[in-house]
Image (cartoon, rainbow, N blue to C red; front, side, top):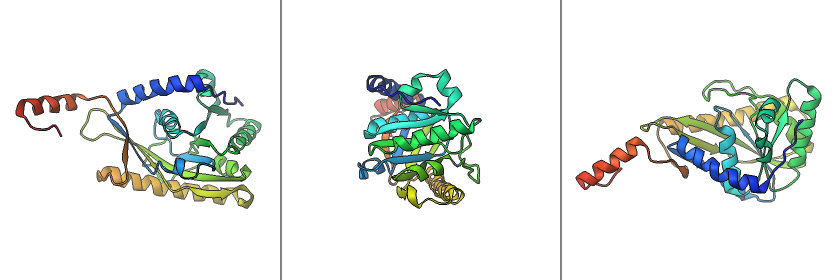
Length: 246
């Protein structure tokens, strides 16, 4: 198991570069329910999210930097060995082929959640999965982590990427209501895993419907991307016609 080696200086530098990458990749990044990160500053957060794409960890890093939390993230050991700088960003590893290593990673994660400032991200599907595939299937790691904590707020988080009328996609993050979980009250790992699956499915369905119907109630703009060809064209037309660009 490879522990995190968070570097404040490195994280400040990477945060600036990460925002640059996100602006180039997306027309916009939207979020809803992000106040869960600041509502109870003396409670650690376990963010359990679906895993629809390569950008998910970088969006997670963006969120924790913007909200002032100490971010940690569980990732595959092969990934962290290849990209060692992820450990400086708060990443730590798990090797699912080794039961002892899994147990060490779960114990390490629960120890990080002893600090009230922590926001620990986990993608319990264990792999990249299309966001509309149902039913959701979780590995039991999230439930095992929660069982080992004293008290932790579990936050279901839906992530989605969607193309609309722009050449680049928009990214959406939808944070559901936090649920306070006391580790001493967790007796059935399978039941808790099913509960977490149901909560995240509900959040993912709500996000899908809002995005497809283009409803933005409750969403705020977290990051605006670089102007696209469509944006520049609209600006030129607006200057020529004297009309305000949409």
